Image (tube, rainbow over all chains, first blue to last red; front, side, top):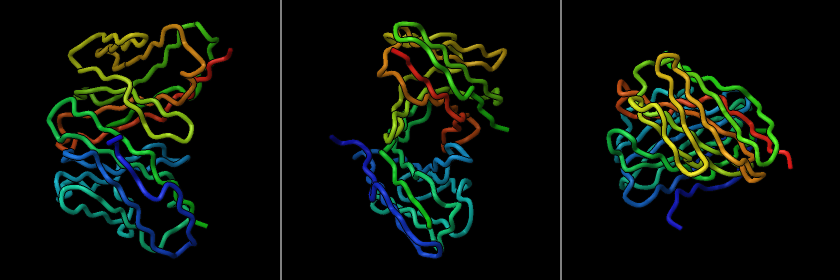
Length: 115
Length: 113
């Protein structure tokens, strides 16, 4: 299967530690998105990549959150000095990057628990 | 501003039709989507509708769009126990070059045998 993959599937960390979450998009997809799903906030957009650049970072909740994408493919989302409110499922999606009905395909997510 | 709202819960009997409703506020929305999320799984796209359409049918799924009332619905015919999941509606707008999805809170559908 050539779907979107994410790793790790589960991550438990202690408050104050840094974590890195990885997303492997579908081959050939130029657009990549990170979303967060939490009980209190539902599904929220975090950041959008077109190629290696991130023209829309408007959803990142604080400067502890950053993301990069290299080679127009793999993306990592980094959360520094994690807080308990960062506990959520982090979802990655990719698409062809066309205008219009550009279907986003989602990965299974990384469940982050901050103790 | 952008806001998408859904009722939280729907329970139906197996074989009945299910209707999940969604309202949105952004009148410039271009595409409206329905995603399905099963327990422990990611989001699966079910269908989408362009904002200049009124209806779209795909096998057991029928999407109705009322642009005047900014109301979107998903009808599932002959609902099966495998349809039990959370259903999210989402929108994108032409004002947003990222085409990011704005999601509703999700409707949990429970299908009783």
